[in-house]
Image (cartoon, rainbow, N blue to C red; front, side, top):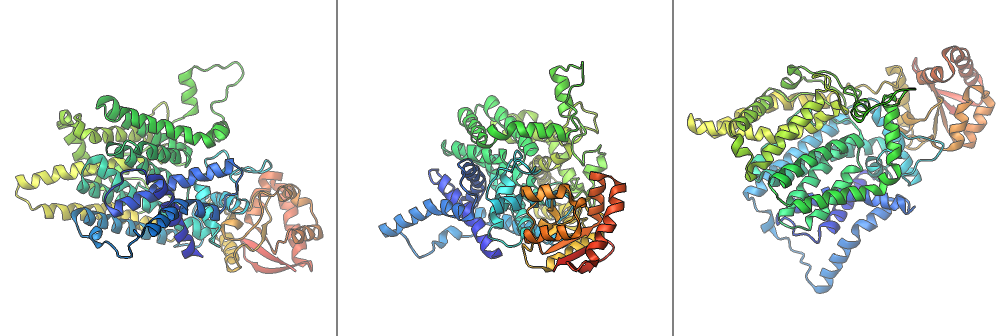
Length: 632
């Protein structure tokens, strides 16, 4: 089923992409044409899912498959009927031209990156940190209940009002894949790697240079601060940004491209709120430089952005206020007024967007940027590496020296890249420079990597220009730079991403508890397992087992769990078709938060002993972290 799910993934994306780009003058290159269809399909998939949910049509993989293949199937039928379908491959499209050679190198970068991300993610049998476990809960809900609307009695952290893109895609894929953990790890890595392909074609149009785009793609793949294999919704935002930018650039060939760009922007706005906002700022900079200063495609680009916003309102019109309120609560209510307090607009913005927002936000030193460490943060590994930093410095020097040339239309992309760099650099350093505002600053490392990759090519070409002056062979410069990038950035990134010792998250109380839960992986997928905790069963679901954490009767029963005797607990578990019960360190941890440490310490050992000595349960696994019982 995993191979079938992978096939369906590409069919969904390509089918939707083919359908919504068929009216365009597309690239004549077969690789570029079809790869960018995948990018468009990624955004269309999200939009279709939101529309289906709005119409109360189930989020079902069969519906997506049929919808994605209707138009391609119709076109295929037309060709067969007209006798135009040829069974012979046109190998002329696959000739090893300079353009195709670049694409083949980019495809190699894609496969190597995918291997790094996927092998690293599967290097341990659990999820890293906490977010993936939480994501697994909403993904399972969508896969099972086939809706994007959460029930009134249960609150998903990453669904409703949280934008549904990530959960929608993963939930639909999980419907044809028995393993939720495999689905999240595999396709999370695949989406990150696909983003590199989308970046290359965007950069090629943006920079008007295939070779500079190729080098920038190499830098983006190697730079440590552009993605780890961490499983979270942010992996969708940069790829959708690249697709949006590609079709904004494609307007110069076909004005109808604005419609595809608008749909891609809508998909971007439905991925992850903070990254979508920052990507929107980058789009605004692009709009100002390209359209106001150089007066290029003013109306079409504006229309595309407006279209994207309007389409995204299919979700945000209903859920937007809920997202704002949730963000205020997550920020500790810092924007809430106390009695007698009044704030002007600037003070309100400062309180709403404090410079310290974001779990991993901190002050940085020069070394943090210049030298890449072999192990960094789980969600974001910081730093550029020595050689990439030097290329960036060369690029900035070149821009200062040639500033008059940079403001010309031909080199507008350089000015845009510099402004992107400045904005993201400042946001990252909200605490370093004691700025008055910030916005999940540590996450901006992912977006900062984009202008760094683009500008590095400027530094590299600046360096190559000296090869003629000093009569040094270009190939020698190329080898030194490529090896230097790999040695000071690529190796550190690969080492970090493939380490098998990533921690399983702060929710766990010990590695022994993790080992106990991992015993459950030996059971058949979707075996009903109940964790004896007052909250949800995200860890159970993340380990490919099942518990209806969002079901109202389960939610209500957990509220009085400590007050239930053994026989009553057994009868209730049996009535819900649970087969296993887990009591461990998390039981003590979370009950202590709910009812107090004294009550938990007094009751939980007694309850565990009664369960163990009853004839209703059989102890099947025990260590110092947890005990697992099977219902008789």
